[in-house]
Image: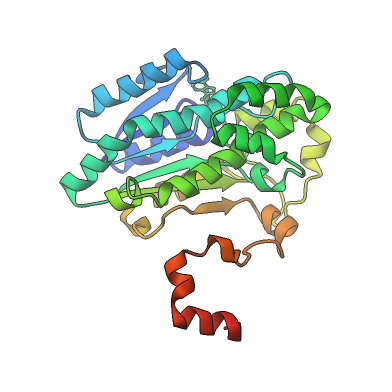
Length: 290
Ligand code: NAI
């Protein structure tokens, strides 16, 4: 049985993940604003330090995985909070827990697994400015704050979608690095669509209700928090050993509806490693198109 840190564990999908892990006999170290082993405000540097230290103290050197579910929705006027909780917190916490995740994997011979909660808002929110995503990824909080102030009525949607887009890209870039994939850690993201939780209820109670209810969901209706938790728990299991840097969409088909032809897409030649470009077999395939 393993030990797993879960943020956002007091509500919604995080709580469903905790219930399932505990029912399976695992130990959980929960982090949230309330009702958690480690009570911490992940929107602040001090709260993040508390979360890092609290989890490491309870883990006592053995952390088999983590689920980063804490998040705040696209509520107007909370743009900086969204950035702090949805992007800064999961990336900071994971960087601080990496050594223990890697050491546990080395000690057990089983890869440690991390599931980060992204969102299909990363890809289905139209027009998220690239500069905002870059400001997250390059750690430029001043630029990010200035951009969020000029987006007017789109600010909350861009702040939310931008935080999740940057987070998904961070997961994909980080997951494949020697310090992660090469050190026995499997880092992946799940991208839910609209799931019935308190976070979504807050949005349904606000001015965006019509927009949310009319959003295309090919299978119809809203998703179930327990079902998403099942996916997250599967991504923590040994069956997910070969899953690395993936963003798993579980959204009733919304992303496929909007981007059916846009993804997957062939990589640009610029992103192909040099050694592969030099290989004769690759050159032949590129010419024949096979
Ligand atoms: P929820 O509101 O039920 O749970 C979120 C948890 O995060 C709460 O327990 C809350 O206290 C905690 N949290 C918020 N701010 C915090 C802070 N400053 N410090 C510590 N903890 C904090 O929400 P839900 O829906 O279960 O969301 C889980 C994750 O899934 C979030 O990252 C959310 O962005 C994401 N998501 C949710 C979707 C939905 O439709 N419900 C869709 C796509 C992604």
